[in-house]
Image 1: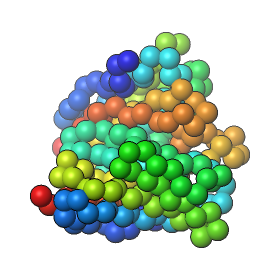
Image 2: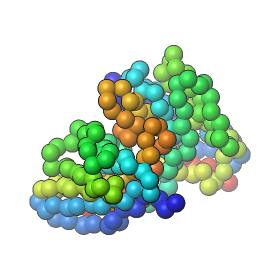
Image 3: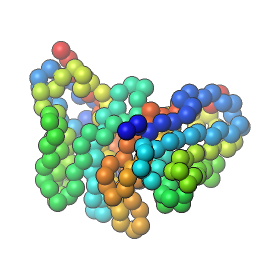
Length: 116
Length: 112
């Protein structure tokens, strides 16, 4: 019940295109959903995060869409650039049961390649 | 503000040895979490500390332990190293309340 399933495993997009990565969760106690970007040799960097009380959040070219009833959320990268080529991770967390947002359950990651 | 710093960045140890990794959180952050990243298992939560108290622990054997100091710095220790402990160990800090978890560059541990 703690799993977060992420798809696709890899994604190839042309420059200027839209990259879409999807995640699904089972634990209805999750109430915080961040996305991370990781470049080789670096730690994951927080991109954007959403809570279940909103269906969409946009920051620059990055948008999270959230569907609470389906228990799914997705990351959209508009106008994808070669510099966006990285591994992207979705995650989920909850404060229920005395835990905190320091404990994230991560998806398996999506390797995004943006061709020039 | 400076980001999360981790030392050392790279480490090679022999099976059976023990290792201590260090983490300095972002200034003002009192919560520190540790994660293990491997190609096979992905990113897995190890433990979280807040105000020197362990608040959460992941599903790892007792060989993995940690602590947090009064200045919020944290260390994790792995005893009796096994080949499968080879991984990138990531430290992350947070100001709490869902303000975001910020990761350091990690320590690459290789066990031979």
